[in-house]
Each structure stands twice: as structure tokens, then as C-alpha cells.
Length: 221
Length: 94
Image (cartoon, rainbow over all chains, first blue to last red; front, side, top):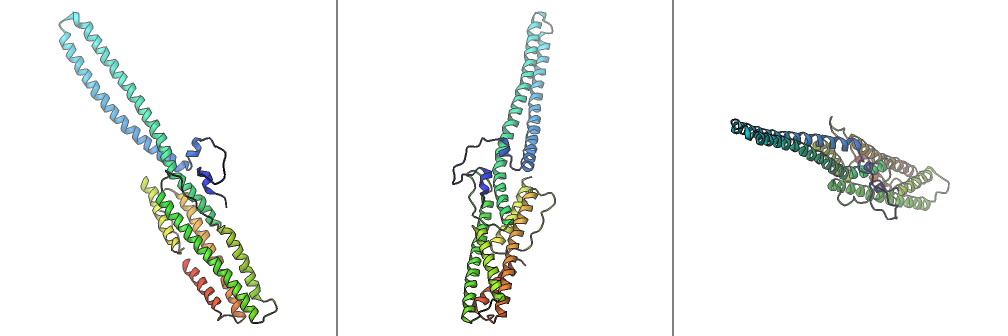
């Protein structure tokens, strides 16, 4: 049975070559992950933008108030006009610098948040991807063993439910195989004890059952 | 957004519990607007695969039971066990 964990980077018994991490490795379910990342990032950017505007507005209001007060103070004294203009210029450049700082912080926030969300959604998409691989195998009637999730993955409870179900299916199918095998042997013995010699439909049915059991054992391997 | 992801997972978890108990009854569709549609479709295919396994077992068992009965082994305890096994499998997919 192929190991679905290989696709999610889980450790496997055989040594594997080192693969370089790519962004595409983190985007296992692009549709789900990018939608979620985009939504949260846009919402965060809007909130940060609104807060930033409020901060800038308050700062600008304070600067304008200082400018008005300065104008009033230097109105009658021409010698202090330069001083007033310099203060006004400083305030305007400070206000401008605040905008640049807030834009930089906002962009940093978006980048950090986006990267964090890629990793977080990967920790959700990874287990879903792994379970999907097992679902594909189950659809083909294969019930091989299930390996655990990586440390740090989300959806551990969900995966636990899946694993418990899978193990239960395997156990039940194994018990059924054993029962069918024993039944085939017992019926052959009973038929032999009854003294039947010629090939009968029961022989054909038991041969088909043997084939079915062998096939099921392969599916459970 | 998270509800639309958690909803399908919750639904699949309920079906997983049923399957764990050996019940493979019908799987219903997701609500409109739910996420994880592809994942859920894969689950439905997996469920269908398990149901197909049960049906294949039933077909084989029924053939053996019929052939055994035709040879006069219908009262054999093993045949009774096979009947019970086939019945259990039939009940599981009803």
C-alpha cells in the first residue's frame, strides 16, 4: 500500500532524500487556504487601516491646534515668525513620517499575518489531505494501516475519529475474512465427509470464496 | 467561515462514528455554502467503497449458502454462521 503520509512530509521508515520546502508544499488545498488567508488578511488590513487613520487624524488635529496657537503667539512678533514656521514644518514632516511608519507597520502586519495563516491553514489542510488519501484508498476497497499525523498538526480529534473508524473497519474485515476462510474449510470437510466425489456448484462457490478471501487479504495488507 | 469548515467535519465525524459501529447507511449531501465539498465527496466515495465491499461479501456468502443448501448442507452450523454473517452485512448497509 502506498503511504499517503509521504505527500504531507511525515517521517517514513525508509530514508528519503531531503526535499526543499516550497510555498506550494504549504498550499495543499489552495482554494480553501487562499480564500481563508485572503479574507482574514483583508479584514485585518481594513481594521489596521481604520485604526491608523484614526491615529493620524488625532495627530493631525493636535498639530493643527499647535499651529493655530503658534500663529496666535507669533502674530504680533515678526522676529518669531521663522521659529513658528520651523515648528509648523517639523510638525508636518512628523505627521508625514507617521503615515510612512503606519504604512510600513501595516504592510509588515499583512506579510506576517499572511505567512502565519499559510502555516496555520497548512496544519489544517495537511490532515485533511492525508485523510483524503486514505478515503481514496477506501474507495478502492483498500484498508491498509493508518499512520499518525505530524506533531503540531491540527484536527487531531477528527483524525482520531477517522483512525478509530478505519481500525474498526480493518478489524471487522479481518474477522470476516477469517470466518469465511474457516467456513470454506469446514464446508469442504463436510462435503468430503458426505462422500461427494464429482465437482459440484458448491466447489465452484467455495473456489470463488477463496479468490474473494485472497483478494480481501491483499486489500487489508 | 470556520463554521462552514467545521460543519462538514462534524458531519463526517458523525458518519465515522456510525461506520465504526458497522453502520454504513446512506450519506446525505452538505448544506449549500458549506466548505470542504471536495473532501466530503471523497468521503462519500470512501463510504461507497466500504458499502461495495459489504455487497461483494454478501454476494459471495449468498452463493456459498445457496450451493451448500443445494448439496443438503443447509443445516450445517457453518452455514448458519454464514447466514448470520450475510444478514449482519445486509443490515449494515440498509
